[in-house]
Image 1 (cartoon, rainbow, N blue to C red):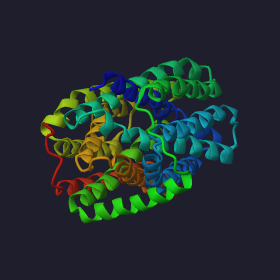
Image 2: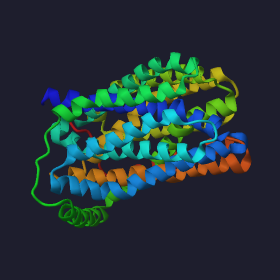
Image 3: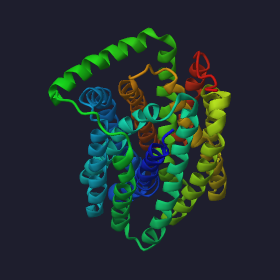
Image 4: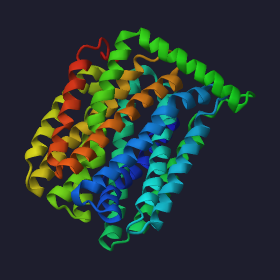
Length: 404
């Protein structure tokens, strides 16, 4: 294996996790829902759910086609850079937001999320190219583990800024952190192969190839079942990620600095979980690891409905963190077993289409239930449906056995 490729690949997870932690999960959702919009009656939840759902819908629709273009044009790294630039720029512009700028915040947050999530399509497609199959599970886990370290560091940097109410400086810090730490990926990952055909020609070929990929997947019943299961249970995971901090702040009264400390503890437990389960993913098989993780998530969502104190929530969140990176790494590793040679970008385009589509219904449902019932507790309990349904389907999938 080429260590330079692996280190630069995992460092991109380190870089974008600053966005995932500060903007997508902990500080900005609460800032936008409670300060920019105002969360009386769940209105802030509704708008934040719209941000996540719209941005994920755009990525879901475009990613399989862009994946095809990247392969035919030979510009995988170029697309990764393009999307990262969009995200970094939009994050920096968040520093200009003021109270009541609901639409401006909606647009900027949507663009930032499109840039971040769109780039992940091309980031993921590098994995089968830089790592032999027998090491993909552990390297996938390493990526998530290093990403959690990036989350922890960026949150530690954010603590003094948030305590001094310097929220604009916090968003600017994330923009710079993301830009600087992602640079090794653009410098050292395999170069684009290049092609003389135009973007239009590449787009047409990419579209046709994507259609062939979809037809191929529809003919492979096990891949189809896997993607249906992933579509459903990932919806629950994504909803927990984007609303956990808003739930803690609104229902349980967590302050911004308390949320950061809570999330750091969660990231530490998630980092431990990702590294501890990296080898078992290869030895036990990713399917078994996914099933165990889903059972844990069902338990977590049920307990969250009854939680009444900050201490109870802190303990529950720490336990949940152990399975956060595990289920994501195991799912990605399981999917790589279904990918034919040289079809990485197209298959990961479909993977992204399913994954991002799974972040459309959950956030909308949570926001709608919170607004309609004027309580976040029924909304958090509804997530159990996604985990349980996904579990029942993934159990029927043939595959996902040990890589070794």
